[in-house]
Image 1 (cartoon, chains in turn purple, brown):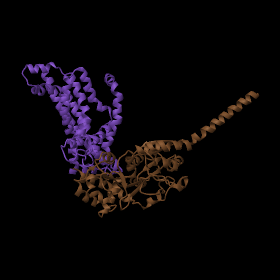
Image 2 (cartoon, rainbow over the protein chains, first blue to last red; image 1 turned 90 degrees about the vertical axis):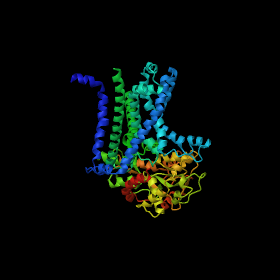
Image 3 (cartoon, chains in turn purple, red; image 1 turned 135 degrees about the vertical axis):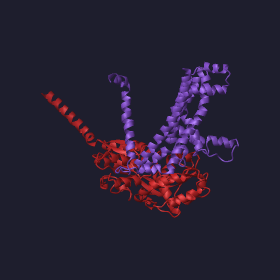
Image 4 (cartoon, rainbow over the protein chains, first blue to last red; image 1 turned 120 degrees about the vertical axis):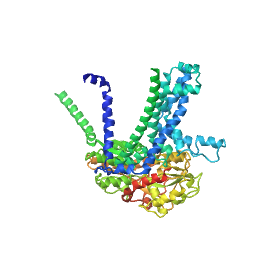
Length: 283
Length: 340
């Protein structure tokens, strides 16, 4: 008992802070969701029923999760090649690339989001280029579309994918690539059979962070996505802050938490299986 | 002996002096006011706090809270109010009155009461700023619209930026739009019917906070908003003009209230009095805040559709006691109708 306490001791302050400021409010959130009225006087399942038996709400859940998956796919498709380039670069260029990758984290997400209005707007940089080159007669509609939102989330969330991925890449033994090539594997085969399984844990960790962040990116979703794209975070905001219906807001918040956690668990499991297979084979 | 008595006299004088200096500060103390985060908080910190300190030696402590938060936080405090004063828009004000969260106000205790136009103070609170809502458009890209229904016609509709029932200004604008098509304060059905017909053409459906940015970037060139937003954008060099629709501009007031059970009532009155005083109201009505003043002694800015505050009684107003119970349903409906 005493030994366990000594072992756990250093984690105690943070653990207590988590209990007080995360677990306790979370339990309160669950409790609030079981009230039937917005003044929190009558208990009942009314708000759960209202959410669960309405197809519109399920569409919002699906749209939110899909948005996260699209952001993950886009960041992985762009981030993985960048990570491979980083792996092969000289130490100087590695530092430069790392700095460029991390730099967006140094500015506020609000600033980055509003910058995307300037880029994607009717009179924004992209449209000026498209119109200037004569690629379209009318400005493209990029803001307030899911495409525009995914594009901006890809940039906004990219550092979250790159940081864990690069840390795994840094430990990657380059001799393995030579070994694979000398055994006759094509570069593509090496990528899929050697590189990807080895970096899978980092990729999964990054994908997990991107997914969690993109599905809950309230500011980007509302500013870039606009009023016609409804996602769970804006539903929570509306119910809590405008309608003052805390029980329903609590229900939506719990659904967001559970659905995002479920997908995250799948991503983490996939990463562990891929990583475990390689490490199991190595052992 | 002489020396002693002189020293004693000096000490006594010093003690009296310091007591004299200390007394007003001890008696004055502080007042805690809930305030909207952002521009309101900045404006009150810059212009109200120094006046309270200078004139009454009162420290103004502010809690940045949106209207709904103020009502909720008060409800959660169970008899020990977390702040002495509320600042609220008409909707939450009605909710707070219903829930018994205000002390009654005796307007005679306010030195500036004569400067406040009729209808801007009642037994529950005093206005500290007004909002005038109408149509804003880019005169370089669009002809001047005449009324609310123009928003849904060509050439305006394809440049229209919409917001829903999430804000007070959005709600009253959509109600006015509904009225043009036969609706009323309690029936906004025509808005949904009419919007559905043109939704494909509408340039943007945004959150209220994003609208100024969308207008500035040319994503939309016409929207409904308040004069404050128009003047702020104009001040930044954006091509924008305010139009009072032919059925009348809408006005509503933001009010200050004293929290039920406050133990600081005298200071709360002084805070309210300072906030509505001529110098403070004048400062708040200028750049960068552009509040619509409530004090008759403040000259109105050029961007406002009235010459005097008393003219505001002609503007369209709404009964939030009727709107409040319906609003959550409208917000939900707007989500569904607009969702892609």
